[in-house]
Image (cartoon, rainbow, N blue to C red; front, side, top):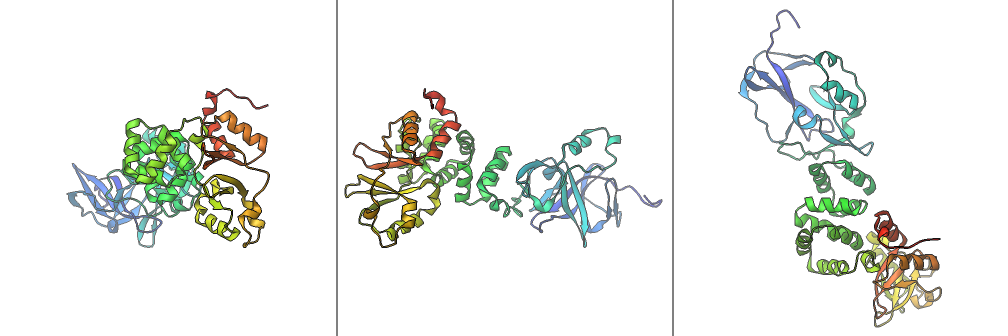
Length: 399
């Protein structure tokens, strides 16, 4: 400090304006001057170092600082808060922040997310004198969440979140707090959010649904695969489940209520109801168009179901057969052995597994008493049940 310099006050926080590019611009500092918390505009800052800020002038507006729309306090709202390191697809907590002058502005350019840095800040003052970066990440690779008390959602970098795989986003959700989880879901499209929920365990989805208003929860469930939605609904208290079903469109509510009526450990309880139904007189070209319309459910479709005039099962034609056939070929020409494996909706897990193993098929159909298809059970549906631990409720063995 120069001999003629005078102490103005002590810096208690930094103010940044979000939405000013990948690196938020620092608009000023909050400085304690006596009993007041004054605002010092960034234009007055001549130099900003670790332990000392030098101003161009000692003239300070002594009116108490008031946060303006779009501003966040770096120390209060960002430091020690959860952010997503998009580059590493992980949730981290900021232990220290790095500012740098870029052209004429100071900007937030990085964050130290190391545990050692956090512990250093908790140590006695004499140990905190020297900055020792531990694990610094580029702020351009950070997607921050809404800061407590801020008047605007911090969405500047959330576009990169939308580019992550649903499984990566599901992993992030598991590490976030309640408010951050809800915000992450809100910046995704409803369909993308539903894809993320399908990558999570039923109890984790249930927790998210309980945190959301009934309308938001219903909107997410309506876009999920029915079997995944039913798994989540089963875990909800009856009152919450009823509220969400009432918020759903009537047709969707009726469909999910019907699936909920099946016992949890029975075929009807974990089948998927996305079926492509065809008549024997339909052509392969018609079948391919029907599959295109259902492309968002491609993971649940490994064959097309052929039914007669009364809707009864005729055959289950694998997609590979459709791929090899000429577009003008009728579906009737593809019907034939081996015939599909089927179960009733009341079949338990042991019967389902036995059918899959015996027939060496990737899926089997669930039929009602009149042999009309109700749904399909894929091998991964069975794995989901096993991984969730539900299989312990039924005695069965695989030799």
